[in-house]
Amino acid sequence: MSTGEARTVGVLPRGFAARVVVPGSKSIANRALVCALLAEGESRISNLPDGDDTAAMLAALPVLGVASRVEGDALTLQGVRGRPSAGEFDAALAGTTSRFLCAVTALAEGTSVVTGGAPLRGRPFGGLLAALRELGARVDAEDDALPARIVGSVQGGKVALDADVSSQFVSALLLAGPCMRDGLVLRLVGNAVSRPYIDMTIAVMERFGARVSEDAGTLSVEATGYRSTQIDVEPDASSASYPAAIAAACGGEVTLPGLGETSLQGDIAFRDILGSMGASVFVSGASTTVSGSSVGLRGVDVDMRDCSDLVPTVAVLAALAEGRTRISGVGFIRRKESDRLGDLADGLRRCGVDARVTEDGLDIIGGGAHGAVVSTHHDHRLAMAFAVLGSVIPGVSVEDPDVVTKSWPSFWTMLASIRS
Image (cartoon, rainbow, N blue to C red):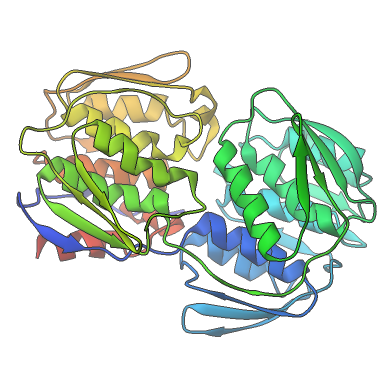
């Protein structure tokens, strides 16, 4: 957890042109790391990001009994053939890592403890832990929160899971499924949130030889184990939304190499949303280029249930746009790293923006923004989103700016390079 002093963003010049190399997707990287560590044989994962979430997963590898070596931005690791070692794991503030580790350690023989920092211990785990119990693990966790004491080994079988709390619960179980003795039949109850992340999980699993089928809301995972492979992690679409939004807001141009016509990531939707707000978006086979409009941005009405990590980006653009923006479908993000509805709206109001929390989203009327000191609430996405606002509005200062290390440690350096 960072405690750095507030950082004043500084307005960027209009009409700039920049090429921004975005770190690899932490979501793809952590899924690939789980598949590789559970696989038979040696795998190689390149373009690994250097954020805190990935670091937390890498720190778990030796405890799980995985031998690995780093070569530049690539990692080669020898899998454990579906039988990790038990141990104690501190996921810091990494929600994805902690949930994946709960499922992975349920495959181990012996007792494991998964914990994390105070904000992570306040996030929900109940649905995932209950499912692991039904599948044969013994789990002890006060109020179904971290720290969780997990005794394997889980055998698999059939289980139902409420999928409207976190897609990470679904992904964690799916990732462990090929290594369960009886495989996994997972029935999703309710309307699954962030469905593209579940699809991403399945796509990565299939790269490592898993077989997953779906019928009428039930996902079936065969007990195939994983085979080793090589995978190059594509740039993180969620992170790419910030420099793209800066270009849209400042009337500049940003090219994002590596984010071409195809992507595993649901948050590539930032391209369509920015386009609907008035930005110019050009997509080639190898990159995306976003340019600001000479007539400015306009408000939109958008359901972001499947791309909720983009809510802070769209919200700050809405503050700079003409008219009203309604963001819906995202009531579940109140229990992310922060309350991404209440805390985001509070920061916008501090900056003079008319922002209101609704039952399942935000209602924002653009215009009137001014400088202010805003809190990140230990949330990397709030920090980077308010940096977008500060790139246009003078005097915006971001508290705890180093929280960006969770996903993009060099974010502020990137922003400075655009200014220069």
